[in-house]
Each structure stands twice: as C-alpha cells, then as structure tokens.
Length: 90
Image 1 (cartoon, helix red, strand yellow):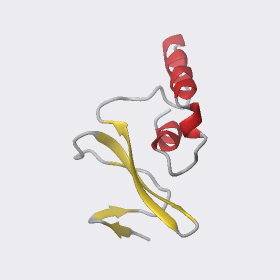
Image 2 (cartoon, rainbow, N blue to C red; image 1 turned 90 degrees about the vertical axis):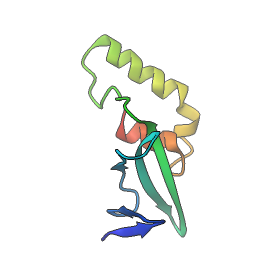
Image 3 (cartoon, one colour; image 1 turned 180 degrees about the vertical axis):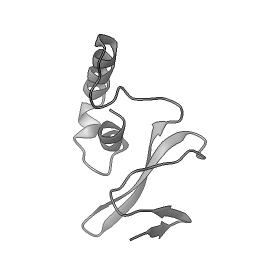
Image 4 (cartoon, rainbow, N blue to C red; image 1 turned 30 degrees about the vertical axis):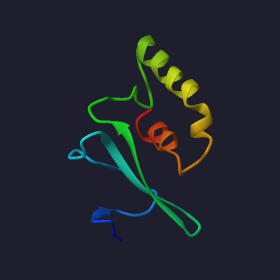
C-alpha cells in the first residue's frame, strides 16, 4: 500500500523513510492515529545517531544525553519529531 501525500510517496502510515534530497531533514514519516494524519520531518541531514546498540562509552553517553534532553517530547507520542528520531536514529 503506497500513499501519496502532498506529492510525496510513503510506503504506509507510521513507516519512516529517508529523505536524502531534503535540504535540512534526514527522514520523514506520515503519522496516523485514529482519523488524524500528520507529516513529520525529523533528524538533521548528515548526522548519525548512536544506533540501537552503541558499543563505545562515547556512543552510550551520546545516546543517553539525547534521550534525557528530549524525554518530554518523546513521551508526547507519534505526532512529535523527537518520538520518531528516538525510534529511528537512536
């Protein structure tokens, strides 16, 4: 199921995709909860997260800092960019 939304194609709702041609944001997702739909762009272009399983102490600290810094926004749920950045990049 592909979804066309404002000229952009998505594989489905709540399925993030990379946006290599976007000038500032690295990913986009078409978030849907109930009847509400929202296009969310997140992640800075060119910046890598620490990954789901960081190996070095520096990566672990970087991941912990991101999660602490954005805790309140992550908890807002699927309509926040921090939620998706946490899920995809961190």
